[in-house]
Each structure stands twice: as structure tokens, then as C-alpha cells.
Length: 213
Picture 1 (cartoon, rainbow, N blue to C red):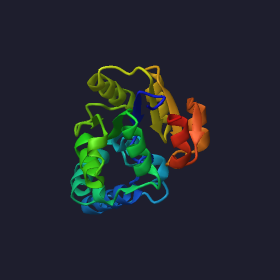
Picture 2 (cartoon, rainbow, N blue to C red):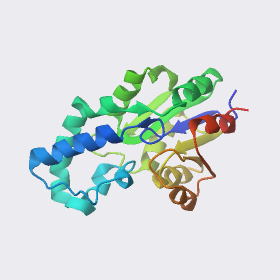
Picture 3 (cartoon, helix red, strand yellow):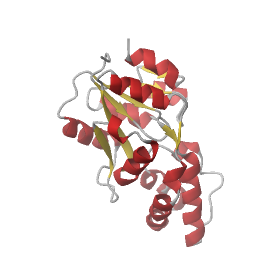
């Protein structure tokens, strides 16, 4: 049995490297709408938090609404299929599930897209719950996503969150849950440390011994 009865996991930057699919779909959406691509402002820092939060400061609220509609369509058609598992993640998930831990996905990505990604990777059956945002941003913060995951799980005794951005740490702490920082993802180590991550782990292989003893 895992030391943690419940393991909440982020998706982008934690389980999979989805940058190529996200940026490709986003660039296509900008081109479709004739919105100039902000070369100096779009980078790894926008990955993780919801795009509807990060884009307005770059292109404005009105352009963001139009871009998000086109982006979601293009991402569903192609971008989500370009999600690449980080080395060692598949083995970690199977070991955790095999030892009886409840795994729950808690992502700010739209849940419909997250479910397809996990299905494509053959991981759906490993998760007790798969929770993401709604297409209309009904769960606008990571804290809201985690709240929904905990509600579906029916409790969170012995829970820990694994994520690569400060939003994961802050969202977990809002519910009294510790967060281990995925140092291989899109966030900076100082970002995770400043947010209050209890530890920053450099690889999925190093994470395993911290969850299973």
C-alpha cells in the first residue's frame, strides 16, 4: 500500500509534455483569426494555468475569447494527440495503482480533453476519478478543480498533490493538502518553493520512493 491513500495528479507538465500540441493549436488559432503572434510573450510560463487567465494580459480580453474558441476546436482535433508521457510516469502510475493508492487527475485542462488523453495513453482505468475544467470555465482555479476531485472521491484522508506549477501548490493548500513539486515540468524550482511545495522532485523515478515505501 502507498503511504498516501489518495494521490492527486496534475496533467500538463506533470504526467505529459503537452507543449507542442498546445502551442501548435494556439498558433493555428491566432493565424485563423489574424491575431498577431506575440513571439516574446508566449512561452512555458503560460502552460499550466488556464489559458483564459494567461492570455488576456497578452492579447486582451476580447481577442482571448475569440482565440479560445478556435483553439479548443483545433486542440480537440489534433493538439491533444501530441501529448507525450514523461519517462517513468507510466511505470509510476501502474505501481501506485497496483499498491492500492487511489489516483485522481486534477487538471485545469478541459475534462473532455483530459479524458481523451488518458484514454489514448491507456491510463484511464488507473484513475478512480478524472477531473478537469468545463469548457465554459466552470472550475476557473486549481483549487476549484481539486475541490471537485475531492467531492467525487468522497474524502481525502492521506492525500497528496503532485504538480509542476504554483497553482497546484496553492490549490492543494487551500484544502489542507501537501503538494510535491514536479521539477521536470514547466514551473521553475523557485516558483514551486515560494508557493510552499513540501519538496521538489527532479524526476518521476525519484518521486516513486517518496510515495511508496
